[in-house]
Length: 215
Image 1 (cartoon, rainbow, N blue to C red):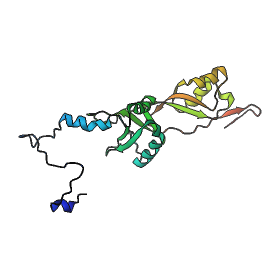
Image 2: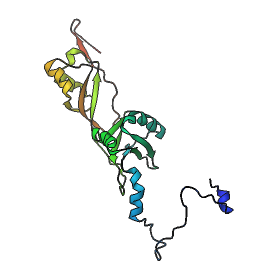
Image 3: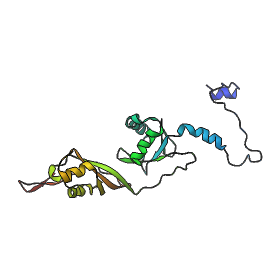
Image 4: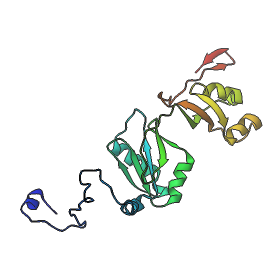
């Protein structure tokens, strides 16, 4: 390993990378750095199957994101997670299939109630944090009483979060055919990207014996 003092004394250990002086183009020493495109292509190969992600106006500690996503994406070939100085995360996968399984599922990732927006990385890409006013997301509402299971009632509940757009097939089956899974209702909702999303909704329903509303 090279040390600062050792380099100054001329005692330089040859590491795995050949570190050397590479002069610029003659006559353009004071101009911008121009890296040969073949060099860039070669250096980009290890990151062929990489996504990048970002948050808007919010931050999460890198170790928190790293630990949780290693757990969530361990079965789809996630190899490494990086973060640069501007708050962009990079998610490197072992193959394209694993990477695309994440991207095709959704263009954002919900993490601690904060959306991380995902895009595919490519060489030469200018990283920008595009603002998103609205987000479409599938929400699950658990522990609903039987008398709540109708399309209109579920829309009333989901409207507390945003604009309901669609039900999944299981939720439709319960509402229309009165059979199937009732563990939760799954609803596609348009949410504001600039507001904190609710994790819990209180629902008042009627006690038909006492004729009072109860939570």
